[in-house]
Image (cartoon, rainbow, N blue to C red; front, top):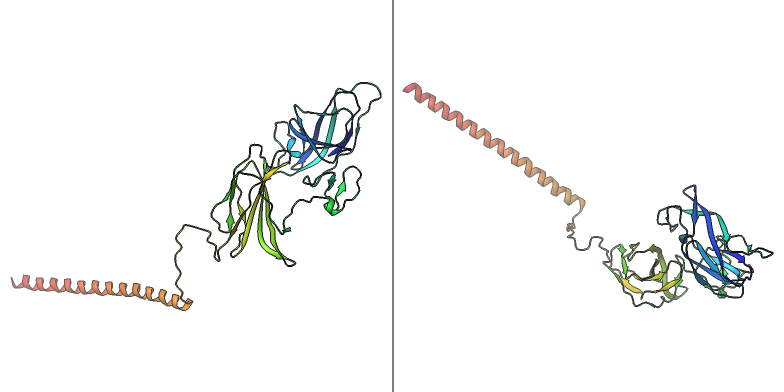
Length: 325
């Protein structure tokens, strides 16, 4: 996000953003070729989304205010977006601003230093800047704001007394519940990011509600495996849909479910029964099997000796008859 003032020249002013990010320890030149940016003038308290076409977005003549952009609108030389799906971490190194169609004369463009907005989910002029999540500030004055002036985003471990109301008609379902659960949803036409929230029922300070156990964001997907499901608990799943500009499109109707006392991680498979015997009994059983094998070997040996004696007797008898003849 950065502050900018452009002169009043009775026509829109094209602005282009280029820059560099550090990816995997290396500099990567990037540009904002398409997508969206948000603008808010000093006289407003809400963001307006405007498109980026062929590198440029158009600022109103005489605009004074903030421009907010997202990393996932930037791409490298071969068009790969910085959306985090390549497994790399990115850090902003530099941003270059190009303002086109400026007339000559004394007209000036004023640009403030870029600021990293930690949280895009806040309403109005409130922002958390440069990694500081402890104090929300007015983006124009820098003044700290009261907690009731800021709409905070949810974080893992948060406690809520009520689940959010579903605002979408699209379906949200779950499959078999083991130590994991996989929610599936119908993708929205402009859906880009889906935020999956797994809550576990509990209480805090005498109030009943839900603790946020897992929080995962996925992109252009219609399902996500959630782990850490425990037996004998009550859970709830909430999925929020956002577009490519970070604007929330709606909330799927939450799903609540209970887990059994024993969670089977292989539903549908036959599980062999284990006898309720002590270790000594099991060892005794193994010994009886070994003895039966040894007895079998002895029996075979006796049988072989008997046959051998019988054969020798026949040979002797035949030999005597031969001598008589």
